[in-house]
Amino acid sequence: MARDDRLIAEVAARRDELVALTQALIRIPTLNPPGRHYREICELLQARLAHAGFACELLRAEEAPGDSDRYPRWNLVARRDGARAGECVHFNGHTDVVEVGHGWSVDPFGGEVREGRVYGRGACDMKGGIAAAVVAAEAFLAVCPDFAGAVEISATADEETGGYGGVAWLAERGYFAPEKVQHVIIPEPLNKDRVCLGHRGVWWAEIETQGRIAHGSMPFLGDSAIRHMGAVLKEIEERLLPALAARRTEMPVVPEGARASTLNINSVHGGEPEPEEGFDGFPAPCVADRCRIVIDRRFLIEEEIGAVKGEIRALLEGVREGRPGFSYGIRELFEVLPSMAPADAPIVRHTAAAVERVLGRPPEMVASPGTYDQKHIDRIGRLRNCIAYGPGVLDLAHQPDEWVGIDDMVESAQVMALVLGGILAR
Ligand SMILES: [Zn+2]
Image 1 (cartoon, rainbow, N blue to C red):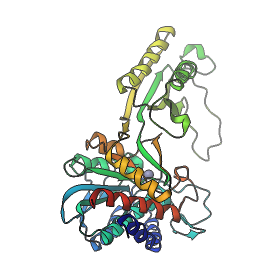
Image 2 (image 1 turned 30 degrees about the vertical axis):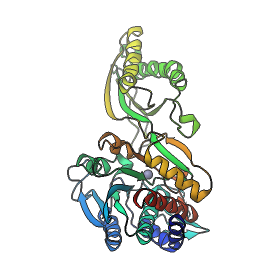
Image 3 (image 1 turned 135 degrees about the horizontal axis):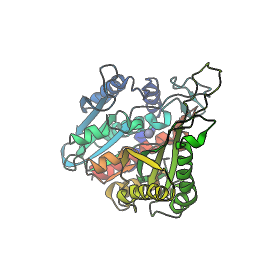
Image 4 (image 1 turned 45 degrees about the vertical axis):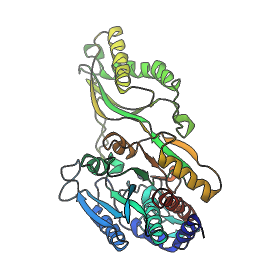
């Protein structure tokens, strides 16, 4: 049998193992925030990978944001060297999951299997993807024991909260340096028939307008920060949003609506605070002296971050010139630059060929509207030969009754095994 056929059969034979590993991962409730049970999930994967001959390092991201003795940020990096020197293919998956939320009809940490699906928080985002990568690597080692180069698998913390205690921390310490790792696949749930090349950029900032408090019966004696913010919102609504919507990218972002620049107003706070729960009295009459909004600006690879920020500052200056008494402050929260692997990068070509072999059709090339850990691998690690490819339907991520399809996991694990074969067993 040809190598590819043997790899495909070897993964198919491990279907039950793949389901069992996914269930075991789901049953460890690695909720983030605050970042629970990272050590347990790393130890589970460490035991599994050590058995397959991987050298494992368990690393705590000390002093990373969120790391504490109560909630330590543990990460696992596992490496299996081949018989000869060669390139390294690395699979990176985040172990954290977001809060459960309401509306579940199954136990979110039960790992229930029903009608060809495994259910649970993190099933698709992205414990099914981690399990698929592990099983793909094991199948590859069984079929191609004398491969050249190395296979690495990392399980990392905190992706959902920015990745600073996970991939960013590892990248800063050289774990994704191009001399060490040459190809990266992040098995995020982008669907088994899509290759995700990268993501848009992000800039978050808080804007505050300032006024003067007075009695609400004589508002003319004060200066309402909420009315000033209204003028800012009007500019955003009438000028900025149409301008952003008209700015289109060459990045293949899905869904289609995200193929333009966007801005979300994440929150508005002004005037009297929300009453405490249980308080049923009335508000006091005051003119608001402070109003704040938080903006979440997603920008395109064609845009420069300096121009993105400058556009907001120019908008605020424009309001100030036309509006007596207007004063404002702006506080930058964080930023992420866009990242995109070249469409002809080796990992893209190998993965596309493997998808075509397993599914019988070429993959769709996409980019993500939001960011994920690729930013750190690209911007800190300086490795652009990185994609996201993995099982699961992105729309189900963070939803109640999250699930991952067993067939999807098997097929994407077959793709990953073929990628290993294509790069390391030549
Ligand atoms: Zn994810």
